[in-house]
Every structure is written in C-alpha cells, then in structure tokens.
Length: 512
Image 1: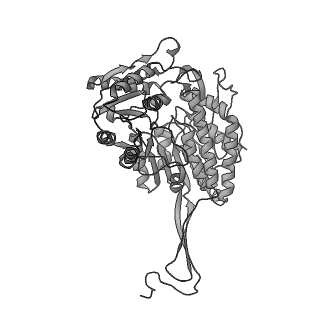
Image 2 (image 1 turned 30 degrees about the horizontal axis):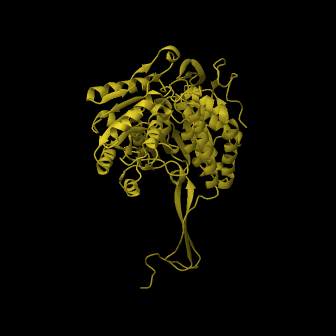
Image 3 (image 1 turned 180 degrees about the horizontal axis):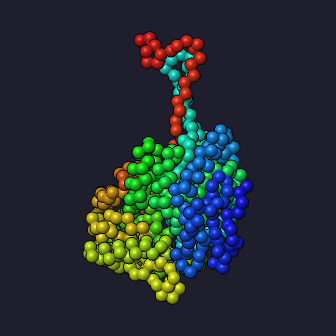
C-alpha cells in the first residue's frame, strides 16, 4: 500500500490548507528531481489554491518508465481476471469517495458539481466495464484449412503505455486510458493536464488502495514539452494515447511514427446538431442548451453548431436565446449554478477573441459575448453564454473549434442541405439530429460522417461501453471506450497447433 500522497494536511472543499502532491513512481510518492513545483488554482476563484504539484522533467519520466518496465515483467503474467478484480475493487472505492473527488474536481476544473459527480461516475462505470473484460478478452478460433490442425488468435499486452490526458474530463478520460490498459496486462506512465492534475491522482490513489502492484501505474506531473514529449519519445514506451488539440496530436503522432509505437489520438471537434421542421422543439432546445453550455462548452463533443431548418428557425432562435440568458453562471460548488468558468485565462481570451471574429464575419451576436468580472466574478475566468445567429457555414466560427460557451446557429433549407453543412468541416467527432421522421433519422445515421451520432439528443453523452472517437482531423482512427480500447491496448498473436505428427504445408499441401 502506498504512503500518503500529501505532505501537508488538506481539508476538502476549502483553501485553508495547502496540499502538496508528489509524483507516483514505483508505488511511492516522490518529489521531482527538479525540486520545482507549480500551483493548481481554482478557475472560479484564483485565490483558492487547490494544490501544489511537481514540475517534472525528462529524468522523472525516465524513472517512471523504468518502474513501469520492471513491473510489466510480472504484471503481464497475472491472469487477466485477477487484474480485473483490482479494478473492480477500485470502482467500489471510487463510489465511497465520489462526493469528495467531485468537489476536488469542481475546485480544480470549474465545472458544476452535477457534472463532476458525473465525471467520477464515468470512471466508476469504466472500472466496472473493464473489470468485466478481464474475463473476456475474446479472440477468434477458426477452422484450419489443414486436417488435424487447430487455429486461433489471442490477445497479448503491448508493454509500457504512455498517456497524456486533457483537463476537461480529468478523471473520466484518465480512466478510459488506464483501466483497459492494465486489465490487458500493460503498465502505464501518465501525465495529467497541468490545469487539473489532482483528479488523476485521486483515481490512481483509489487503484493503489485497491491493491494495484507498484510500478503498474506511474504519474508524472508537469508540462507538455517537459513531460509529455519525453513520454512519447522514450524508446521503452511502446504505445502512446493522447487526448488533446489537433496541433499537439500532430506532434505526438510524428514522434510515435518514428519508432513505430502504437498511437491513439483523440483530438478536436466542431459538432453539429440538426433541427428539422418536424422536431420536438422543447426537446431540441433542452438538448441544445446542455450540449452547447454544459462544461462551459469545453468538450470535444460540445454542440458548437446548430443547423436549423428555416420553417422553425426563428422560433427556435427566440426560445434558445431566452433560455440561454437565464442560465446562471458562477462557482460550480454552488448547486444553483448552471455553468462554471473557463479553465484558465488563455482559454477565456480565446473564447472572447472568437466573439470578435464572429462579429467581424457578419454573424449576429444575439446573446452574451462578454466577460463577467464584477463582484463574485472578479477572481475567476467567467463569460456569458454566447449565441450567434444567421451564421454562414463557411465562417470561422462555424469551422474552427472554440472550446468555449459560444454556439453558432445556421439556417438550412432542407434535410439534404443540413447533412451537407454538417459534413462540411475538417472534423468528424459527434453529430445529432432532432426529427420525428424515422426515415430521415436512419438516413442521417448513414450519411453523417462522424464517429458518434445521436438521434433526438445533443452531441454529448457518450457511454463507456461503446467506442469513442471520430473521423477526419478528429483523430487517427483508433477509439477509446468499449472494445475499441481493448483493441488498442492489445496486439494479436495467431497460434497454430498441428497435431497431425507430420509436416503440413499450408496452401501447398492440398488435394484439388
């Protein structure tokens, strides 16, 4: 069992104590070799110091990879059902700590408590799912083309896996990567986002307390160039999984390609929600508000484009704007708040800059667009929910990922027009359509070129037992979640057992 993460006491939900969090390497909580640290502050109130974390470097990464490599020699031989039992116990621990971990996450990430509870719940769900996979990990058995010969394919682990995770779902996405990897017999080195490291540490703490052997998971905190890049470059890391921006994805993908590492990239999105004339508008507006402004629009699957047929366009816009103006913005620890802050000053600046872009392009700003910085907002990164209407599909605000509470409403003439607009971007992560016409719903399922499609629901809401990921510039074809994750974290080995007691030459020894 690992010793305590914290070198100073901390009271959850307050800033009266300073929490100092060390790296987790080879089952021990250790300082960075640099001797340097960085602060993790609440984006809703920057006076609130959530914790102090290690400002690590390449040497810390090397120590973590070495530990993971040593652990792999033993961990890969632990039967998969036994590995999975540890993950199952971690799920039970997460349930006990759900509220504390959700409050930690709201403080470090900003999203409202209802959402951070959901984030922890997603890690619980991922743990239960992957625990079940420990008794599956299916491979095919097939008939041989030769007599007295048996043929099958089995999964084998890859080795040391490196993970680089984002700040918007700091526990859920870490669980998507870590849990299938270890159930499959791999060991891991993970770099959490520097804006939200605590939630990943909380997840790994639960796994450690569940009995995970030392070295199976190692955490190195720090910044991308100093930690993320060395993880991808390390010769003993045989697989890399990144969730992040397209720009970073190109860098990590290029590094991985040089040494033929497995590489999973889950990148950007610009997700369309189509509303046809026959849609249930009450439902579409509820879904649109949740999809656009949930997590302050800081989701790769956020509903950032609403493509609305002209027959209901004006009514939809009026009702959407009326509801958006009533959303309460504030500190996510307040249970009456609907939308929290941007993650940091840089993201807020990006969000506000796109408001200026939209206005300069001729879109109509009908709601929001301003920073909130008075009174209770003075020490946070807050912005009004923002809606542009009469957006042209070729405008930058309709093409580029903003990652904030800014949505563009695009009029369309027909169902076919809506599909063309939806597909007319470089990304292909998520999509949705609101309609009562079953024929159009199924046509949309076929023709929307995205990795995820929802019918009569917004573009957010993925479940852990189905593959998650997208097409085009959204990634490189791999998937997280469900069987997609198992496929990424294993390699196939085909096995042939010849019990004929003679040499048989496949494709040669056959009687025509």
